[in-house]
Length: 571
Ligand SMILES: *[C@@H]1O[C@H](CO)[C@@H](O)[C@H](O)[C@H]1NC(C)=O
Ligand SMILES: *[C@@H]1O[C@H](CO)[C@@H](O)[C@H](O)[C@H]1NC(C)=O
Ligand SMILES: *[C@@H]1O[C@H](CO)[C@@H](O)[C@H](O)[C@H]1NC(C)=O
Ligand SMILES: *[C@@H]1O[C@H](CO)[C@@H](O)[C@H](O)[C@H]1NC(C)=O
Ligand SMILES: *[C@@H]1O[C@H](CO)[C@@H](O)[C@H](O)[C@H]1NC(C)=O
Ligand SMILES: *[C@@H]1O[C@H](CO)[C@@H](O)[C@H](O)[C@H]1NC(C)=O
Picture (spheres, rainbow, N blue to C red):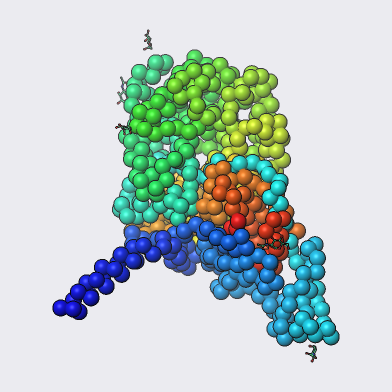
């Protein structure tokens, strides 16, 4: 009898205690794949990381991911110690620094800070053995100056395209919920933004728009409710909020193409422009979408003036999906005389309007030409939206010019993916770290150039990088296996974005950071709770020793593994 009671109590209390103490942190289930390694999630298991909260002023938490397989690995350290804080990457095959510097030959290692301009001394023997030799080696320095402040973060996110919505629906509820939590929960990567299309886009199963029938209907008499595909997305967004516990999702919407009858070529794709008699109709179409979403209790945070307007002007030769061509001069007329007044005189006047929504190379000429056409048109814009696709070729100074001329406007990257170029694998490269590095480089560069946020493209794609109606196959941070829909894979790209999105809450302010090592790039932020998040990227194929020097907190030595990215959190 006694035993039974004891047993029951024990069962009861251990479950009770487990419920209280079990953290949501679960490590990645790493699986080797063709191009590297992915983290595997199933209905029963998925990796999460509770956000570290440093308690003491001298404490720092480093979250690390690397080519050889670290995924949000946590290391703790303290400021103002002479010991080097090593990020252990046991799978890494590269030469260790110990060998480089022959640390093994020393009786004891004393790191003596020589000066902070990049050298350190290693002494043989104990500190008091003055006959010991002194070696000097190169040392990289990261300077953090929290007194110098720049832009504020609006957020990070991905796109809920028709394809994403379709794929999510094919998964069982537990798997869907892990995807929502992985992206939007605090223990996931903390997204707060979602981009979606007004009508169809290139990642849909067919091209579509509202009010395709009747044609030439200026009153949009048949656009009285949303499409079934929207209703599915709305249910998914509501579930996403419930599951992640994050309700304040900022939804950004953009149209790819109007119904064909509004266009010069009466076609979804190809060289086109909006027929001038439908300028007001096309503005009303945008407002109607905002109103119908509002009626479903979903607030549209922002719209853009249209996805990639140059696709219908110069890009139509190789772009075969829905598009509407705009020259900057004509778009300025539409914005200034139609869209701008329509939105600002409506009940939804607070919806933000972003301009351009196209590649870097269109900056700054696009806005200069808009201004020439309608000098006040830019007043209707709250921000500028940029797509990343040619960022490798076109330098960020193009964006700087626009930012410097209009520093009060927000800057957002609104689309990115890998696999779009002729010379790239079209579709996912499972486990590719080099694709993750492309993201890290670009996000770092954009943030260093005053971007307020960064939105990725498809949240999930299938194993072929689709499906869609134009056989346009690309990569995504999460790949679902449609042949085995009980599991999905978090690509290295997922963690690449996560090193920023998870740790940079809305309202974080960029502070000054500098690196003395060209292979180590850095960007730093002070978060709304006052703590710092420093994102540090080592693109070197060797480990690097770094001295992090914060103008308030002091100094810490960190050894980072080859090809790795880190978010350093401290007070
Ligand atoms: C570390 O040392 C610096 C310089 O001596 C000092 O200003 C700082 O407060 C110290 N930091 C901590 C966390 O003790
Ligand atoms: C000092 O270091 C030298 C070189 O490593 C060693 O030969 C010597 O024995 C040491 N002396 C003492 C007192 O430890
Ligand atoms: C309205 O649109 C639907 C498709 O969404 C179509 O079936 C219907 O014929 C249209 N109505 C008119 C009057 O054209
Ligand atoms: C549009 O609506 C107006 C007023 O409601 C009406 O006079 C006009 O005939 C309608 N036009 C079309 C093409 O339906
Ligand atoms: C629409 O454009 C595509 C691609 O340019 C072309 O193949 C197709 O024939 C066009 N359709 C019509 C109805 O003109
Ligand atoms: C919208 O929210 C209100 C208040 O929370 C609620 O009464 C209404 O039923 C909701 N409507 C829809 C379509 O969900």
